[in-house]
Each structure stands twice: as structure tokens, then as C-alpha cells.
Image (cartoon, rainbow, N blue to C red; front, side, top):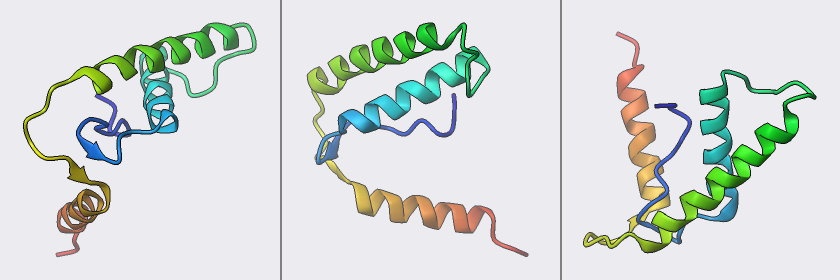
Length: 90
């Protein structure tokens, strides 16, 4: 899985359309093996991103989650702490 794709479910406030689009873009980049498609493939690339973003919205809106929503800032702090611990100099 691409490391740049972030979890979008169970956050307060909910994932924005921009976040869903960014995740779809990263996914299409990963499976296509390119960050910038050629002019001949641009329309197909853009359509794939749009379709994946649209389909991604459905589970985000319909999933039933029993746990309380996570706080974005708190989760970012936790991720930063994990990163600092992981890459700390000896």
C-alpha cells in the first residue's frame, strides 16, 4: 500500500472531498506507475481518479463504526512522535 494514502474513516470532522481526491490520486499514481501521465493518457488518468474518489465516498459515508471519532490533530501528533522515535539518531 502506498504510504502517502492516509486513513480517511472515523475522523471528526469527516474527510473532505479534497482529502478523498488526494487519496484517489495517490492510488492511481501507484497502480499506474507514474506521477504524471503522458498527454495521451491524461484523460484516462483523470477519469480513473474521479471514479475512485466517487467510489471511495460511499464507504466513508456508510460504514458503521462503534468507536468514537478520532481527532486529526491528536493523530498527527502521535504520527510525528512515532516518526521521531523511528528515525531518532543513536
